[in-house]
Amino acid sequence: MDSGARNELTVQGIAASQGIAYGQIFVYLQNEIEVPSYQVEPEKRIEEVARFDRALVVTRQQIAKIKNEVEKNIGPEEAAIFDAHLMVLEDEALIGETIREFEATGRNIETCFHQVSTRYVQAFEQIDDEYLRERAGDLRDVAQRVLQNLLGQAENALNRLADRRIVVATDITPSESASLDRSAALALVTDSGSRTSHAVIVARSMKIPAVVGVRDLTKRVRDGDWAIIDGYDGLVIVNPSESTLFRYGKIQERKKSFEARLLEVNRLPAVTLDGVGVSLMANIEKSDEVGQVQEFFADGVGLYRTEFLFLNAARIPTEQEQFLDYKRVVESLAPKPVVIRTLDLGGDKPMSGNAELFPKESNPFMGFRAIRWCLENRDIFKNQLRAILRASAHGKACLMYPMISGADELARANALLEECREELRSRNVPFDAGMEVGTMIEIPSAAVTADLLARQSAFFSIGTNDLIQYTLAIDRGNDRIAHLYEPTHPAVLRSLRHIVTEAHRAKLEVSVCGEMAGDPVFAPLLLGLGIDTLSMSPAWLPSVKYLIRSMTMADARALADEALALGSAPEIYARCEAFYRARVRIE
Image (tube, rainbow, N blue to C red):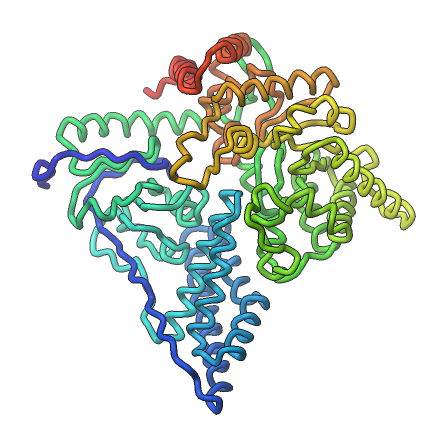
């Protein structure tokens, strides 16, 4: 090893998969596919379409093979990632639009497919929801494979690592991450990406550390450089000194011991040192994530994002299809509650198979989406409402509406829900007449009028991701201003306190289902402000529960009072971090 040959370099990224790795770097640079463009003679056009069909078949076979290998080597939940890839290949809109483009222009099928698939990828990249935005990677991955097969190019794979290496890449597609040699990949680092990318999901499943969003690292390192990858704090330390190596050796020992302690404590109730119980729930996107809810001992589901069922479909799912999906979750977790959020589709989350329902907008984040879209598409909305009502007969289902901006909007949604109740009663279809119906508070106008919304709601659920974004006028996806996205901004804390005050005055419970809820640094602040329930990704539950069992609620309330008196976000964050570090010692 020659770590002293170059100076130590520390780069901050986003912690994506926990763990610490040390080894040599392999820089994986994917080549951009060059797509030739030419005119196809009329007599060869039937064969050109047949060539497209053959490429789709070969791509299906390749992805099915990858799926089988992942299921055998990693597990069925991870293999399910590739169901989305296979569904892309069955997407009638994508395939049909490619054929129409070919018939209209006469250009070779690679050019037509590349143009159409690029439009679809760009549409998904505009989606506000981070998890759903990452699905653009699925489509890009499949499109690349189809183009490779059309052009007769070899697959781009990462299964040929000669020895154990840290893979550093601009980005990694899901199928590339699945082809990683588990015995050879020490860690994964990417210039772009997020915690919710499928590459990260695979890395977590393989239990290898991952750091993403490390801008331009591929241009700053070279093959053979030695590095430490810190998947806990999102750090990449290139050419570490001997003292840094020694320090990280000790850190790794402590982290492993602490993780084991977290999982052990997670089996115990979430009760503070002064005896206050806290409800910890899970956020899920798909019905097959029920296993994770149970595995991490969640008290139920605080947010079931139903749009995933629609976004991966070539057509609108029927009422019966939705009912069976919701029933599976509600029944599996009974008697624990399952909060089902109605569709958050719209300009920023278009269905690829129903583009006509989602006209292009210049500002989709503030446009025709979520409850606004549902109220204008009553038949589709009522199908979902009836499906949720029917599922409520099989356990404890709750319903909530997203993006409510005021009392009139909420009244219109509730009126449609009552119509659905009457329709089911007339058909003698069972449902829970007492099913609780809540409101998501994620727009400043909803926060300000919380007292009015409380009159028509059984509970509130605060979507902090959007509430922060809209309150501070910060587009989280804009790299130039993302640093201004501050959960501890005084305006955000005052909004949270106001929402809680008005909800509790009306005897309503309040949950938080945004990313703040799953961060153990922010959890005490939220509980101190009066939040009743925290809902988060299942894997985050152990860290939050551990902290709750290490603090008193009295101290959390004192922290909230102190934070509300402070004038800047950095000051408040520093106080929250100090609170956390005083109670959680990794040793």
